[in-house]
Length: 159
Image (cartoon, rainbow, N blue to C red; front, top):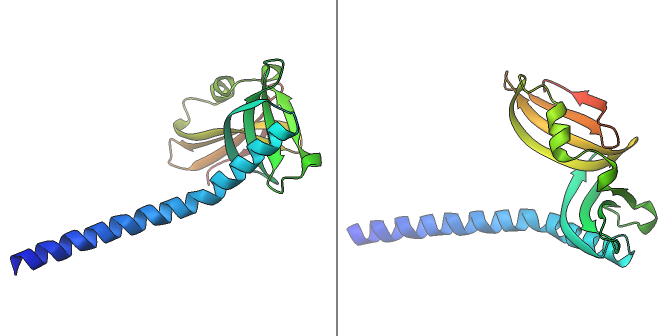
């Protein structure tokens, strides 16, 4: 009887872990697929010759931000729309704007408890840094800082 209890417990635990891994893998695969397609499009349009990173940015219009190097060795960020429309691709040279660290330094550190993410994305005024953080009162905050000059564009506070 004891062996059956151990067997059922181990079986149920293994089943739960297996299902959890499958669900996580399936939930991430659409993002990975669109990131791979966006990297291929950025390279095929000669925007960059190699990609170093990519992630999905959800703003007013969703884009995949692809970081890479062009044929001159300059680092670029390419904003590929989720629709993979070649005509809507936007580009910025990373040396023409502020870095992630500079964008984070603009925040009031006395107010920030935990930074959740900092993403470079594309919005109405151009490239922006989206910074999501938890403040000292455990409220979610989003701030948008213009990539070109580090000015505040938009703040969504205390959610």
